[in-house]
Picture 1 (cartoon, rainbow, N blue to C red):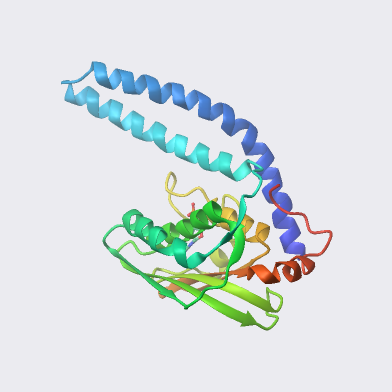
Picture 2: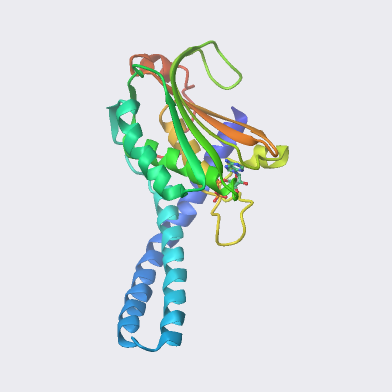
Length: 256
Ligand code: ADP
């Protein structure tokens, strides 16, 4: 719990800091990209110059992407809670994963019959699962298997969750896995092992924030050289009252 609070205040500090800067930065970047686009039109035929402008546009787009993620991270958006049937959301999401991950990653779904409804922000749930899938791809540079599992589970109290009925979503990969040192820090904002420009270190922080806001629980199992499984527990809708009671009154929610 102490660690949770530490993490929460760190998230809030990062959110405040980045939100202000990212907004202005985003506006300036759109001016840069707009002008580069115009320039590109006026140098058609000069392949060397076109290539340079293309590189500048790609780089600026990368900055814009990072800024967008920082903004999304810091923005205290109200949750759009709805009752979500994960089974109906899965086919579209799997299709998106396959397109995003490319041919070398084999994406598979295992889903129980009659998955219980959950009360979450649908867009954030999809973004969280896509985030996990992209991390899995990065952990499998030579290709591999990504398995998404969706199950109904009635659980006894565990190391990091109370007893109750949960829809359990797992994302497993056959990638490089993580060392204990990395495993300990994965949810820290800005913690990344990826080379500069490839990772922001915000993906799992965002997933963590989403899970906390949804009164769920998350754990990671990873074996170096074998792979990683990230498991998200989300309370069955009719048990939401119970789940809320398990959150102590002094717990600060990370966003909004
Ligand atoms: P980023 O992907 O930008 O680095 P994340 O917060 O999503 O940020 O992940 C933090 C770090 O956790 C990654 O840099 C990586 O070292 C590790 N990680 C996350 N998911 C996996 C995975 N599926 N397999 C191996 N390592 C992972």
